[in-house]
Length: 487
View 1 (spheres, rainbow, N blue to C red):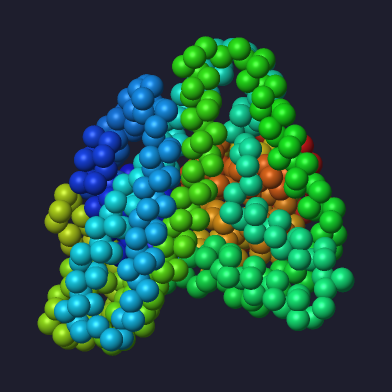
View 2: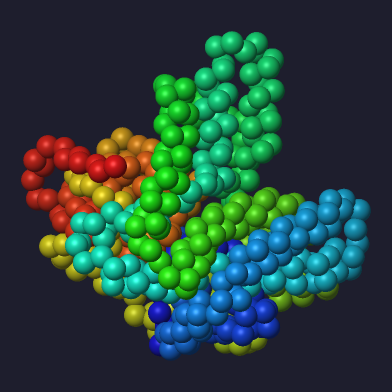
């Protein structure tokens, strides 16, 4: 039986990279794997499914790793070094002038360099991400044994699960705020130079896949215009991280953890950091891979978006035979595709055939009239406002001040829009997911793990979000704005 794992906007090659990385590569490195997966994309979103029984065994295997002291001490250091190494090697390889390569030489780069490296990348990256669930449950269980008061428990939990160092998106904000605060004293030429350098350093942030669009200078100039008090925000951000480190150390001392619990808490902080760090590596990697796939599109007679719907095997076959890919099939694939992978066997369906087979394989959720939706506390507070469903970054433009963003999961390129919302609700995630962390940084009430929120709610629905209790309720009449945040 298939179980929905996450909702993302994925290229077919990236879905296959997850599959290969989580199968052979992950099993070789960590002794655990996920071999059977299903990916369905329609005009709105991409859903990634795993085999329910296999995933349960996978989580059990991850829990076993968390009980190994050697793994706790070495995993993040090894994974970080390997991710950096893969980026360095591929970046060097992708400096080639592809236009000068024959189809045979171009194909060799794909088969011998890109595919093996990306599989190794996702073996590490996927493990960093998948550890979040059992790690959160393990630490939460240990904390419950020490703290019985619910209010105190939630307060300690929020402290322990908050990052102690700024991630890439926060560093981008700090850099932009610095430019904004110094702008009145800068000559026009110096200001433009600063923006160019900023763009060079952070243009990768939206690149969660190779067919996504990098930031431009215009993107950052637009954001600069929205900044009102840069010096104040800079000071607040720096103070926030300073206070977090102090609170974290105070909580750890008050818990008097034994050796195992202390090691787990150290592992938690490393995991929170590396979850964001690996995204930065992924974004930079996709920015480099984009060059390859743009050239592949030219050779196959396809747009970049269409290339993103092809399997590895289809790219290899078309390049190897020096043939264009069927434009009619590419158009059907853009409308919808279904990718089923069982071990090494790959099946892909296009258009209406994909939709029909998906309905046969899975039972899509049928929206019901619900009085309330439940999830888990990620950041405290209450808010009321109109719902805006965000399925991909292409939906972010519809977010207005005071809206309630309801999404599968946030990413770093969601951050500018998140500055405008009054609350955040996600289908997925737990205490250390991106949504939970960014909501605590912005002091936005946030409920994660609501599972069906994007399906049960619609744009324009008026809702109350009680993040403290993890409840979202529909409101029939507008009773005025409600906003109560807790620091």
